[in-house]
Length: 102
Image 1 (tube, rainbow, N blue to C red):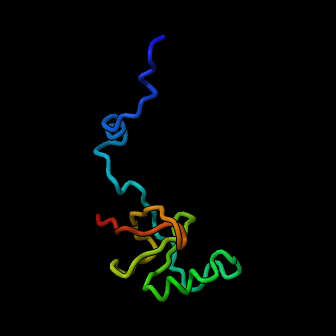
Image 2: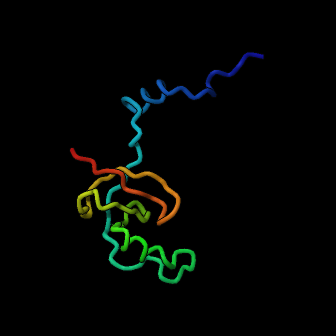
Image 3: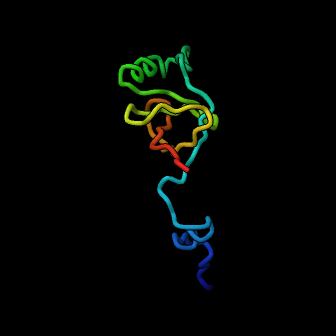
């Protein structure tokens, strides 16, 4: 039986299909809000996360139905800003890596 080549992942073909070169920053989100208070005050798994974010200088944003954490090395963000995100473990699960500057 012949091997099915259609099932193989090919980076070059994937890049062409997406209209260009593969980019490690391919996950983007538009900021929809700035989180000013603990978003999960009653969740025991996140009881200390808000305090940890504040004491570490992180800002928490909302976008794409996700809670996003940004380090102090990034500029302040406002709703409507489009950012690159990376899924992480800990905090609220998504870290803002950079701002898309058109």
